[in-house]
Image (cartoon, rainbow, N blue to C red; front, side, top):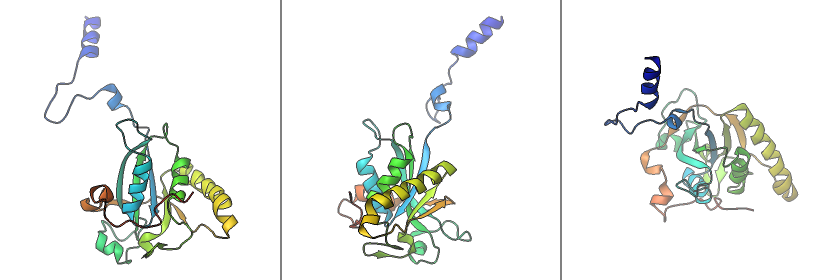
Length: 206
């Protein structure tokens, strides 16, 4: 009797319902993906250049699973900020991109270095013609290990690419706080609007 019951449990399948397909044991396994959050000026261009060079699956994927643009790093007293309030400069939020990635495919250090390659990290509260705290260069780390890596890569990039030119990285590195997705029309904006505005600093600098 016990053997029969165990066999029945092992072969049982969840019925398909209107709430979605059956869940496999792989689906039920805890995700090993990580979250990286970067701010480097107008979030349209930040998201766009990451996805151009790390395209999302289907294969061949390069490690990025999903992205969202939004607001973070602002005053604790201000919740659920919108684009207008962030652009006013009164909330102290940064325009940023939130990247879910698979660390078995792309390492956090590689993403941090790419972040530095694709904007000007030496300007304070500015990228190109975009001026304001919302356009600052910042890394918002989601684990203590990420903070260690971010600071190490920053030192390496400074020594290799900026010290020889007599300039200094001004990028802020903070532990990530609350995140709010930007309005829908901002998501993947430059893919939906290829002729839309893109900050000229969002390019490969080396």
